[in-house]
Length: 601
Image (cartoon, rainbow, N blue to C red):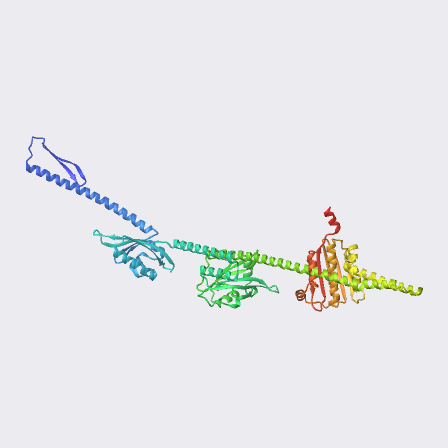
C-alpha cells in the first residue's frame, strides 16, 4: 500500500513524500492520513525555512558586497558625497572634502565650520532652496554655489540632491553630491572675457576705420579698453627727441575712470627718459612690454606712480612705419593687479591696432601734405608764369626804352651830323665825322653790353667757366670788391638750359652780394666730380637771417635762385647769419654733351 503527497515550498513544487507498506495490503484510516498530511506540512515548513535562510544569507552577502562597493566608490570619488537629515544636519560627508582642506569628522562634529565656509549670500540661497524643496517635495534639485577652502581660496561647487523617503513616503533625509567645477567656471569666465575682448577689439578697429586716429577717436579707443579691462587709467604718449638730442615721452591724451577722478598728474605730461625711465626706452624700442606691481618697480620709476596711488602698470610700445612712435599705458589704482595672459594678449592686439591706425594716419597725412604741396607747386608755377610774362613784358619795355633813349638818339645824332649841308671847310667836316665816329663806337659798345646782358656769348661759345670769368670782369669793373674764381677742374659742356640757369644763379648771387652785402671779397668755386657739379658762392659781407629772408622773399632774390635750381633738379644750401657773411652751395647732376650724343646715337 502507498500514500503520496506533493511538497510545495514558497519557491514552487519541490517533490513528493511517500509512505509504503510492503507486508500487507492496507487500507489507511483517517487518522493515519491526517498524520501523514501533518508530516508533509512539517517537512514543507522545514524546507521553506531552509531556502529562506539560504536566500537571506545570499542577500546579506550581496548587500555587504554592494555596501562595500558603494563605500569604496564614495570614499574614492573626487566628488563630495553627503547625507543630510530632514532638519539639515550633516550625517555623513565623504573623504573628497579633504580636497578643500577640511576633515570629514571635524565637519560632522562642528557644523558651524561647514556653514562658515560658504559666503553669507550663498548660504541664504541654499537654505531657501532646501526649505522650498522640502516643503514642495521636489524629488531632485541642483544649484551652483561658491565655497572657500580652509586657506580662504574660492571654489565653485555644483550641488545636486535627492530626497530619501521611508515606506510611508515621508521624507527622512537627503543624499547629495557636490562636484568642484572651479576650473570649468574659470574656463567659462575666460571664454566670456575673451568674447568680450574680441568684441571690444572689433569696436575699436571699426572706430579707427570710420573716424581715423583723431584725438576724439583716440579717447573713445582708450575709454573702451579701460572699461572692458576695468582699469583706472589709460594714456597714450608719443616719443620725441629735443634740440639737444635728448629723448623724452610726451603724453598725448588720457582717459581716467569715474571711480578715480584724481589720477591727473601734470608732471607726467612730459618726462625725459633719463629721469628714471631708461629701462622704458630700451624695452619699448625692442618691442617689449613693461608690466608689474608698482612696489616692485625700480625706485626711480616707482616715485612717479606712488604719489597717485597707482598699484599696477602695463605699458606697451606703439610702432609706426617700423619706428617707435610711443606707447600706451594702463594703470590700476583699486587693487594690486597681476596682469593675466588674456589681458596682455588683448592689449597687445589693441596696441597693434593703434600702431596700424597711426601708420595709416601718417600715410594719409603724408598724402594730404603731398597733395597740398602739389597744389602749392601749381599755384607757385602759375605765379611764376605770371611773373615770367610780366618780366618778359618789363624786359621788352626796358629794351624798347634803351633802344629809344640810347641807340635811337645816338643814331639820330649821327644822322644829324652827317646830313648838315653847310660843311664849311675841310676842318669842320673832319670834326663832324670824328664826332659821328665816336657816337657810333659808343652805340656799338652799348649794343654789345646789352647783348651780353641778354645772353653772354662766352656761355654759348666757351661754356660756364668762361662766362663766369667774363661776369667777374664786368661786375668788378670800377669796383673795389675782389672777385676770386676757383677753377679746380674744367666743367664740361652740358645742355644750354642747364648752363644758362647755372649762370643766372651765379649772376644773381654775385649781384646780391655786391648790392646788399657790402662785401669786400666774393669767391666762386666750380668743382665737378662726375656726375655732380658743386657751385659755391661765398662773400664776407654783412650776412642775413636765412629763414626770415626766405619768408619775406618776393621771388626776385633767393626765391629766384631756388626756382632755377628746382627747374634743373638741383639742391640748394644757404649758410648765413648777420655780420658773418654768406655761403651758397648748389649741387646739380649734369650730363656732358659728349655723353648725351653717345646716348642719342
